[in-house]
Length: 193
Image 1: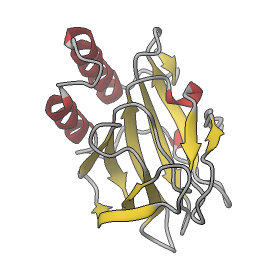
Image 2: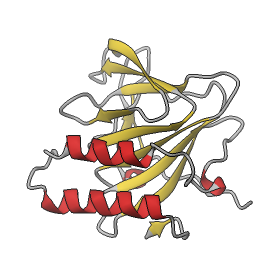
Image 3: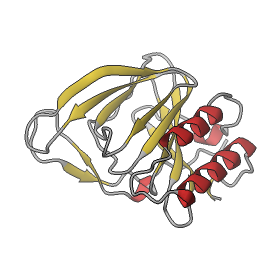
């Protein structure tokens, strides 16, 4: 398992489920999103498996720790660790994804963005509590801004993406409009305890 070196039964089971779904899918945009969501819901139903080394916040920046990367880069699993009040810029993913809330809570606002005009919020602000899931993809809505719902505690969500998300060319959309800025997120280094 590329990513974490520990044997974590809950994560291994989830990875096996995603691998089976990816192998059986014949579509570029997966037709298996509901089953993927159920697998994620099962993974985040218990908060007793995530190692401390990939649950450490940074005082300034949210952290994206690699839990697993498929050897063929078909999918990846990460933990997002949000310090109090931390948030992302408005960004896209360019691939499918499912988010499961493990600890704390986070909010997400979808946007319409064309890389020229100021991004426009659309839909309601979505709040994820432990056990909740959400989806992103180019076909259902891929641009959003996410934030820790709390100003006084850490929140953690688990994300699975349809590529090695740490290597994907993605975009940040300036709130004032103008050209999207390309970025590759990479991964945060686990913190040895």
